[in-house]
Length: 246
Length: 312
Image 1: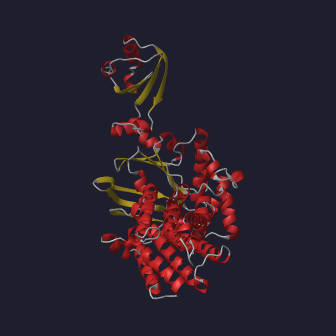
Image 2: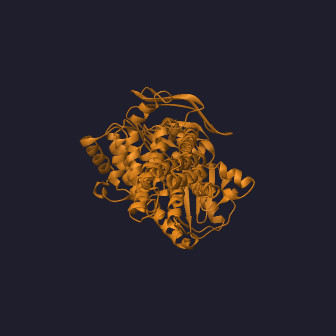
Image 3: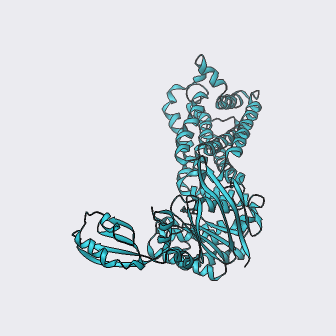
């Protein structure tokens, strides 16, 4: 019962934070618009720059949500109140899982609405009738981003370290996932690392589903993301100790 | 009297450092216990063990007959903790803060409304219930911190240095709230390194230092140990450099401390050496502006037992 109360409270804390609200609503649209405009000359044919960056922009957002979790957990304005829960009849699982799930639900709703708006309002192509497969892919990626962010908070134990390390880890995933730079096309170790990066799987699966109606990697990608997410949650359960924060 | 808290042979270490080293105590229903000691004495560690946040390396704790290891949640439902750090949400109203923490104890509906009101009225913040703590003074935030910890009307309240860094007016306000709780029959553990606060509210005092309880008793029984001691404080007209040895040579002088324009001399009252002390100061070219004296206090007890002051 207390889990629902804490979850609801954390969810409202995200909505009350103007920075978190705008990063998860306006920022993806700004990203798509800016990159689409700047690189419009590099694209021709059926796929516009806006179509391309609508996909990669949402993939990026799904990964950077890890920083939203960090703030939900440890931002200066909320962390002391959050850590007070250790003195209440609230399980340690509730303490970190409520942050993860509140961020996940909020971001999922936001990104789903953005994806629908991008296709049906702004006219970008995100798979037509297959758009819901893309939405599901981004939602599962968001769950992974939230799980990873939570795990890093539990590992690092301080706001300063979490805010410093989490963006670096997320950006490494983005770089090696070839989201904006085709690292996967380089030779040697870069290619190998890219092959094992979840964002590479997501980006590739997304473009296959949207443009080729090819689902050959889709369900494997979903499965891989879920397994990695559960691994992050498992690590969080083992290492999170409320007394470390009080 | 009914025992509500029993702690036996508690030990807790952080790496090589033993923060709590084999302490035992009983606390009775309705008592206000002052937990007094300098920073690093082990007070917060003891409190966190009572709150079940830390597990003792050795020893046991029973609170209201609940074991701190086996019955954590039941124990947490029956105590209220006011942590040393301000643990409130600054971006939501005072009332919403108290309401949220009250709801986590299973309160709801009209009962929660009434308990929230009672908690805010106790700390005199009801008229500011719709305001956000980010606009509060430090003292008001401390009071809200207390309200969040007592909203569920627990039988036992533990306060960890609740007056740190606030003005005297807010401190008095908090001490008055404690007296109200005392009259309501609540059992309260009050941790502080301010002797005067403990003297104002506590029925019984535990003095801690370096992880052990070095003295226990009422204020009267503790100060009786140093009953003969008196501290003279000399205010000088200007700073002075002089040899403290000159005062130590006077019979009955126990301790001398010098800070800028103040000289504190602790002495045996029975030695009647005030005239000799004043003569020694005058012979060393000290120009006396005024003098005060204070009989034995808990500070004196602590100094006698440890060789240092509570604020060291």
